[in-house]
Length: 501
Image (cartoon, rainbow, N blue to C red; front, side, top):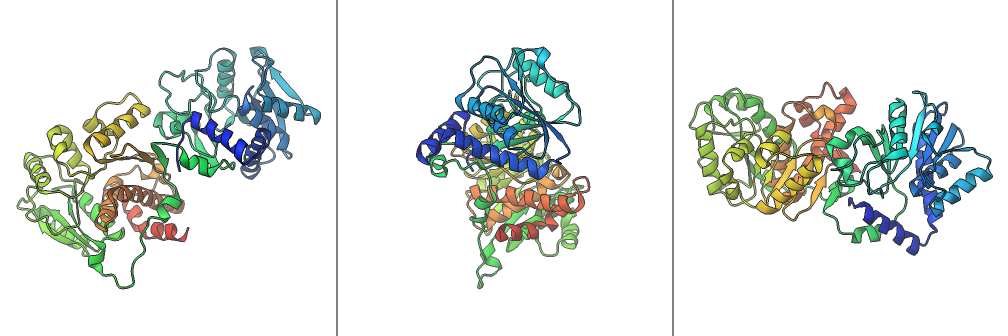
């Protein structure tokens, strides 16, 4: 799913109106209907809903919902900065008045209503077309709603939040929604961590905008959907064998950190690898043979760390990093490994930490390889970021400059590509913020790369499957109890679920 700029979404609206064809007021009615249906499904009817509308089309949506809601006690408020409303907002105001539904007009601060914490606030003050920070009466109203303690549902986007870049915005003039009902497409700002406080949970509500015209819009940002994943997951042939599904080499583990090697290797196998060889120091031999008899073992010269791997020619893909440490001999071994490889590989954890301290090695990484940093590793590797938008821009620039894929782990894990595009994940939950979760992801991506998925798809599918397995676990045992091994044990169910979509 494309993530379009606010200006592009306006063009899609315009095209849909002209070519469906449909009147703009009818398109607004359609949007309002989807919102009303969501409210009817998710909000108890004994709740009082206070509806706040602005003077533009976002306000028109809110007023249309006010008319459509039948079972709820409701109060309607209209922010009047001038006597001029958008055409469709005015139409919906007239329709309410024809039904003798009272609309309370807000001209000044004294017009703000008292709000109980038990109320539900539906806000449509300003939509995604907002291009300047709120001030004056609009800012005061936003602060009044936020300070009420009531649950706020935002229509399309929390008022005051820009659709893309919020650097320079007034963060004290943005609605703090518990739920955002965004229309047709998500906004880029939804994927930046610092905006979670304003957006809350969000859901995309389709309103029938022209899909063909959306497909023609240029965008560098995408949201990973289950449909994209399903159409790219390969089916297994009846006459295939273990060699069909790749032989991968995982270089992982050191004294005291063999758990990382076990988790990553087991995830490799669970994600479908035909053969997995794990290169470990001597101290890890019995541990790996006992914990994971399905894996083969390559033994390092060193008792306790990674110092050398003799042969890398017979593997379909290679991954390195989980638990290897950053000792001097390990640094040399990574440099030597990079000198010997040409095919895309996966680098994680301590492999990334070594790169961040020896940045000259970055140029040696095989093109199209996949790096999987968590935020601190990313900071060490690429540098400090002022906030989310700056971080995404630096991530994409790094991928383009070095011809590498970067999987920046976190909520809505972002995958930047050498062509300048960036994909945001749609699966996963906070319970996955647990030790070893990243090692599992490394194993999954390495497995897919070894199964001859293109690096871009290996990263996208790996991230989605990893998150989906975590979601399945969370539904079973909750977020707090989730551990990395649970993700591995539910990979099969996750892959099956994708195929059954």
